[in-house]
Length: 421
Ligand SMILES: Cc1ncc(COP(=O)(O)O)c(C=O)c1O
Image 1 (cartoon, rainbow, N blue to C red):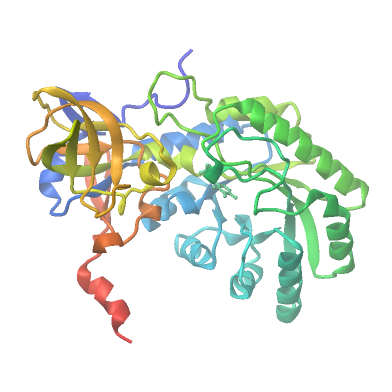
Image 2: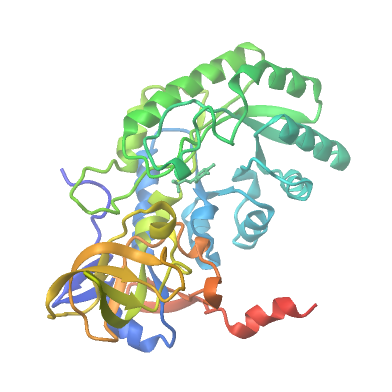
C-alpha cells in the first residue's frame, strides 16, 4: 500500500528541471533578485498536516506545531488556519504565535530556562506551561501569585528511553538538561497541591528529534501513562499526555522505511483511554520536507585530491550539516552534463566547517548553475546567523502556480540599525 506521506508531487523533476508544484525552480531563481533563498510548497505543508490529522482520527488530541522548527509568520498563519496548535520555547515565539492568530489556550510553553517575563506572558495568555525543574515551578508559582491568575501546568518527565539519534537532539534521557528528576515527582505533586492557583493538567516528555523507530514512542508512552496513573491516584485529574515531537523524515533518501504519523499514532492508539487527551508536538515532520534551499554555484575548484563546488549559500543560512554532521540531499535544479566527480559542496564562509554536503557524486556544474539543498524547511532558516555578515535569506512560498515572497531578505541597513544606540 502506498504510504501516506509524499504522495503529492510537491518537488519533482520534468525534462531535467526541478519543479515546485506548478513552477519551475529555475524560472523562480531567475525572477528572484537575491540568492540564496528558501522555497516552500504549500501543498506539501497541507499534506503533512493532514497526515497527522488523519492519523489522529478518533483520538482526543491536540497537534501542537513546534514553532522552533520554522517560525515564518505566513507559514504559522497557514498552520493555524489548518487547525494546528503551537508549541513554544520562548516569549518571542509566544508573541509571534499571537500575531499568527493561534488560540494561546491551545499552546504549550516548554523550556528549561523560562524567564519571569516569559512566564508572565504565558500566564496572562493562559498558555499551558511545562514545569521543568524546582526553580521553574517556583517561578511559575511566583508569577501566578503576582498576577493573581491561575495557571494550568504539566510536569516534564524524562522517560529515559534512548531515542537513538545524534546526542545534540536527544532530550529525554535521565542526564538531559530538560525535565525534572523523576524521583522528585511526589515533591512536585505536593507543591502543586498546596498552591491554589496551579492546576496540574498532565505530563510531558520529548525524547529527541529525527527518531525513526515507532517502538521508541510506544515505550515512552507506556512509561508516561504509568506516571499519569500514579498522578491520578494521588487525586489529580491530569488529562493531558504530551509525548512531544521528534518523528524523523527521509533526509538520506536511501529508500529506508521511515515511519509516517499514522505508523506513530497506530503504535500507541491501543494504549490510550478515553480520559486522556494526547498532545503531540511535531516540528520537523510537518515542515521539514516542505522547502528547498536554492543556491547558485559561484565556482568549482580542486585542492590536493579534493574537488569543491562553491555555492553562495553557506553554514550561515543552513547550519545543520556543519552542526550535526547530518546529510541533506543536494541536487541541481537544471540539466548539467559536466564530468561526474566527487565534490564537497561548500559555502563562502571563512571556516572549514562551512559545508552543505560532503563527498557528493555530481556532474561538474558551470558557474551560475542552480543547486538546492533538500528538506530545508525545519531547523534551517530558524538556525541561520549573520556569521561573516551574511544576511538572513528571503523566503518564497509556492501555492499551485502562485509565487509569494513570505519574507524579504534582511539588508545591511536592517543590520546597521542595531548599532543606533
Ligand atoms: C519540547 C519539544 N517539542 C517538540 C519539538 C519538535 O521536535 P521535532 O521537530 O523533531 O518534531 C522539540 C524539538 O526539539 C522540542 O524540544
